[in-house]
Image 1 (tube, rainbow, N blue to C red):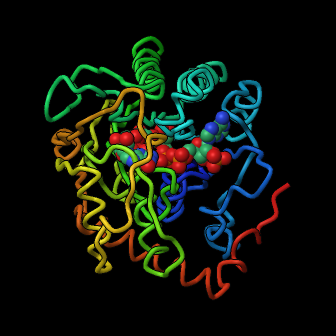
Image 2: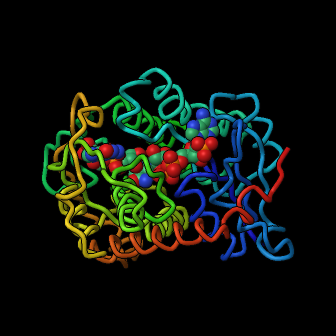
Length: 343
Ligand code: NAP
Ligand code: F7E
C-alpha cells in the first residue's frame, strides 16, 4: 500500500527536494507550513501545477513547531507512516542573535514532535535532521558517527540536544527514530543568506552588471559541501531500514570558502579579488574551522553515495543563478510565483 509521509520544514531547501522524491515514489505527502506575511511556498509551488499527478497527493497544513496542540491534532488526522522532521531555525550566524528562539525551535521543537508521536501512540518512523555543526571544534578528523560533539553556536547546541532526545526516545520508548548527521549540502534552492548561494547569486548579478561588490566574512573556514538532492535520498534510505540508527552523510572532501569563491568567479571568467570585500558583520563569535565527514557507514549500510563533485556543485549553482536572473529579467518568474493561493 502507498505510504503517507509527514514533512516538517517542507518549504525549505531539503523539504522541497525530499517532497519531490517521496511523490515520485508514490507517497502521499503532508507538509507543515507556517503562516508568514507573504508567500513562503515558492520552493514547492511547482508541485501543484499538475493537479492530477503529484499535486493530488500533496497536502499542506498550518503548524508552527512551537505549537504542540496543533501537532497532536495533525498527527491524529494524518497518521503518517514516516515523519521527516526538517523544520528548524537553521542559520548558524542568526542563532547567535536569537539563541532562545533557536533553542525553542531547533531544540525543543524536536522534543515536541517526539512527545506528540508518543502521546498519540504513533508507530511512524522518525527522521531527525541532525547536523555536522554538532562536531563544531572538531575532536577528530574526519568526523564520523562516534566522534564526540563540541558545538560552537546556539544552533549547534540546540542540534546536539535534539540529537540526544532522538536517541533517548529510541531507547526509552522503542521508537523507530534515526539521526541523519548531514554535512553542508547546497543547491540552487539554498537560501541566499548561506555562503554558497550568496556567492553564486552575486556572481550572476555581477556578471550582468547589476552588482558591484560582494561583502563576506571569514574565507578560511572549510566545509564538506554536497548536493542537497543527493542528501534527501539518504534521509529516505535511513527510514527504509529494519532498525533505526544514526548516520553521517558527507562527501569526504573539504574546501575553504575562498576555494568556493575562486571557482565560482572563474566559472564566468571573472577575478573574485576585483569584487569581494570583507565585512565584520558576517563574522561569528565562535567559528567552526574545519568539517570533513566520513560517510563509510551510510555507504555500506544504506548503499548511499554522493553524485555531484565540488566543481560540479559550483558550476550547477552558478549556472542556475544565471538562468534565474535571465528569467527574472524576461519577467517569466512573475507568472509562476504566487499563483498558488493558500488560506
Ligand atoms: P531551511 O531551508 O532553512 O528550511 C527550514 C524549514 O523550517 C523551512 O521550511 C522553515 O519554514 C521551517 N521552519 C523554521 N522555523 C519553523 C517553525 N517555528 N515552525 C515551523 N516551521 C519552521 O533548511 P534546510 O537547509 O532545508 O535544512 C533542513 C533541516 O536540516 C534543518 O533542520 C537544518 O537545520 C538541517 N540541516 C541542514 C543542513 C544543510 O546543509 N542544509 C545540514 C545539516 C542539517 P519557512 O520556509 O516558513 O521559513
Ligand atoms: O557558512 C562563512 C561562515 O552560513 C559557511 C547550515 O545549513 O550548514 C550550514 O551552516 C561558512 C562559515 O553555513 C559569510 O563563517 C563567510 O564558516 O553557509 P554558512 P554553516 O554555518 O556551515 C550546517 C551543516 C547546518 O546544519 C546549518 O543549518 O561560511 N562565511 N562569509 C559566511 N557565511 C555566511 N552565511 N555569510 C557570509 O557572508
